[in-house]
Image 1: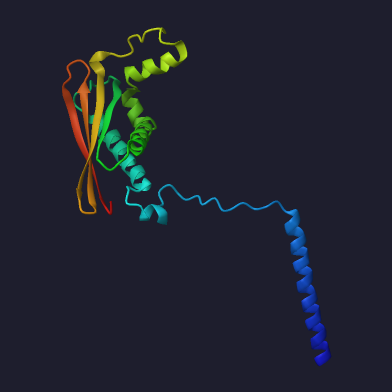
Image 2: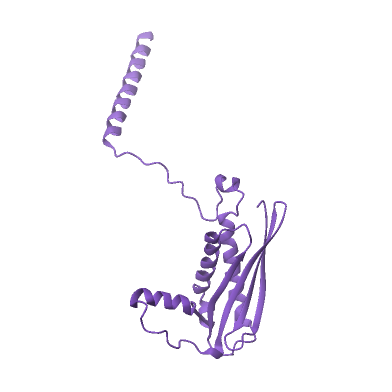
Length: 205
């Protein structure tokens, strides 16, 4: 019995050594494996982000979605819009007066909100969405040069409005209230025909 157990033990050691040699041989022939990419869902905050005192990227995304959803819901009901007419909205000045959000990060919120509006079928059914004339002229100048063709009439002034907004922050200790105010301004009269506030409160920055 003792002899047979020793034989089994030798067989086990032999198999183990054989597997180790086989694994070593395979590892030298296999392409090297890269490190894990570390990808996470956009809505998930990593430990590194949680340790940072700045606003979480996930909060930016959530607030931009909140703002766009609010505008999609509220704008079609503005009394100033002519019934049956697809009004034109010029994406105007969206200003950052928070004091703690960098210009680059604020542009992320602004662009995310704009793109979300453009992806909404409800919004596009009710409105034409234009960039400012200055932006349009700059884009055309890139192709035609400074002496390129002038920008012609592209709007019906009576049904055109500017969408302007300002983002504010009120801080108390480690709690911040963010307020985004929007106003819709008539192209022809300069009258503010609609205004709305959207708020978000965050603890920890």
